[in-house]
Length: 443
Ligand SMILES: O=C(O)C1=C[C@@H](OP(=O)(O)O)[C@@H](O)[C@H](O)C1
Ligand SMILES: C=C(OP(=O)(O)O)C(=O)O
Image 1 (cartoon, rainbow, N blue to C red):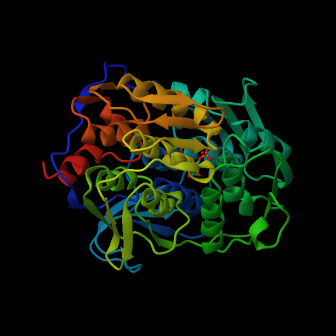
Image 2: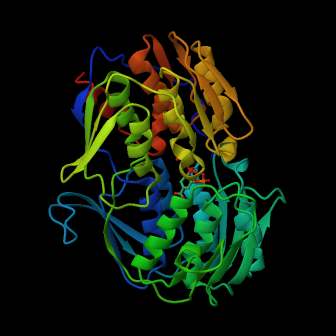
């Protein structure tokens, strides 16, 4: 399942001739869409996803669930009982999960981590494979935990893909301890399927740190919204322990929020050009980590207003460095690093050592690519020091990482002659990126 090996094209990143002034409709959240698909597949009645994200990661999730017997009908609706308006809607009809099946995870953390527990509930063997990088991304938390909870899994002993889950039609469940310091998705994966385990699940995180807490809150919120009972450290439970009670899940009619992490490059464009960008439908309450951008990009020199129309973000013309712990919002790091490289003072980005195991080693990739444009970035044990320098054009390599591509595009707004290698890699979560970007610039 190797990705296309043709030489990746170079995309001349548009240079901004002035301040941007645009409204950008950002497609649905990857993290919400893929959780909604899993929960709908585990439910005891049909459900709807309205305005789902259609991207490589979500199509891989849908394809995997279909391979296990779930029906997903794609429709274009003209009205929505959930108030979602016109647009695409997916109707999910949960059926008995079954193998044999093969799942291509691509390089989607959500697919490779959320689906092995689902496969353990299926009847028959489910083989998991993916892009070469998926073999290197940590999965031990899910594999070891599932074995403790009663699953039979064949792997090569590295705690990673490829592997086969021999689903037995049901799983005992119960208490399990894991070290989720390399990915919050281990916790989310076990909680999402937990209501369907015979004894539910009690997940205890034993590691020193736990990244991406908002994504765990997203899991808990979405589980509760389909009727699951979840006890969390925040609801008075023990620190680092989550408990899910066994029970049936409801089918839901859910309109997916825009992906706020994918709104990042467009907000960054307002900051970098001293312009203005409106993101319609920015939720007033959300668990998405991208909501932290309101605070982070304000500290870096912009200002924002959340109104009934969405989030209006305005750059002042000045870009300031920042010292910030991004452990909760690690996926925002590439975009923040790009802005920091253009700032009027140095930045320190901390708390993101686990990014070395993301789509690529993001700390190494950002350091190398910004420095090759004349920058001065050094890696620390858990992040980056960024000292802004005058940058020049050149090729910005992307390592099949969607967020490297969008980070390079942000730098290209301010620096002439930046060429993004393989901008098509944005298809992982934002296939329309080049069109949205040139649309924003009025090109
Ligand atoms: O659960 C999720 O949807 C995600 C959790 C985070 O993973 P890590 O905790 O592995 O960083 C995040 O970086 C990823 O983009 C999406
Ligand atoms: C880390 C990311 O993705 P994944 O879901 O593959 O972990 C990301 O989107 O930044």
